[in-house]
Amino acid sequence: MPIESLYLEKFRLFDSKKINLSAERSLIVGKNGSGKTTILEAMEILFSGKSFRSTNTSECISHSELFFKIAALGFVNEKELRLETAKSADGRISTKRTAGGKKIKSSEAPLIQVVLGKHLRMVEGEPELRRDFVNRLMFHVKPETAILNNTYNKALQQRNRSLRKKQPVEQLNSWTEQVLELGMQLSKEQYDFFQVFKDISVKYILDEVKRNQISFLEDLNLHFISGWDTSKTMRKSFQDSLPKDMALGYTTQGPHRHDFVFSVDKKKASANLSRGQVKLLIILMFLSSYDVINRFSPKESLLLIDDIGSELDEDNLKTLFNIIAKDKNQVILTAIDGGFLDKINENLNQFKRINL
Image (cartoon, rainbow, N blue to C red; front, side):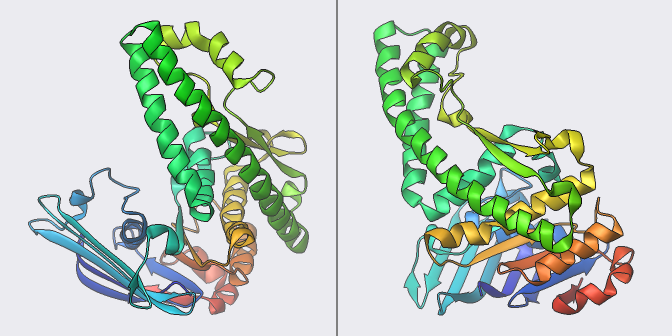
């Protein structure tokens, strides 16, 4: 079980707050503005160093204070896990991660994923949402792909700079060669990982579809998009797109543009699904991450879902709570007090309720 307790100090509206979590499932309940999403944000910063609300985490320091601190205690691979991060107003940051008293890398800590309102756009919205989801999984289970991706992006930035500044063709060609060499390696890694992800995720979702009679997802599928014209070699694809790249000042094809699409009944899912149905689909896909991760190696994971009740009708909400109650992730939900909670009271006995 990843996290037993969380401590926040001088973090946004919390001067000092300790939260004891369930080993499996917690439901954080409160009114708007009570700090539910702030708790999820703090956990994201603690694990990843990034906030889903702000590009500058110094903004999370409580008004007129000089620092914030976040700490968590739990277990990973039967060893005591301690995580701590602090940031001062002048930008200095301190991070400590230990398991069994020994320092660990961020990739050795449990993977944390957060489902927010923006993820409703994953089905037909910006590719960055889908790309970030798959990349985080791939980088976690195959850390060497994160290194490859970073190296590729550095070469890509240099090629884009060369295109923007209209540098001599020899210089452009030099960066193009590096991008091609790294890009072919990265594209293969992306494709191979996606096939594993797709097989496991679709199976997980369809098993739940059958078990819970979710008829609108019975013919779900996922389709990989490489980000470049695979009817040609990558080199030929780059050659053919060069005039466009030069006109726009950036590289229009390559594995940095990889994506995937959802289909239901062999049509785009967005044409068949309501917003509530899309939310159920997206949460099921996030829930499948545990099985994806453990295909590679036994690892813990946390799934945080903000505002669980929004967009879902009573039937879909009951279905989702039934599925989460049996899930293998540690799951932390937030919800507005009242409303739907009274309607699904019989589904809540598997969750530790935390009132703010």
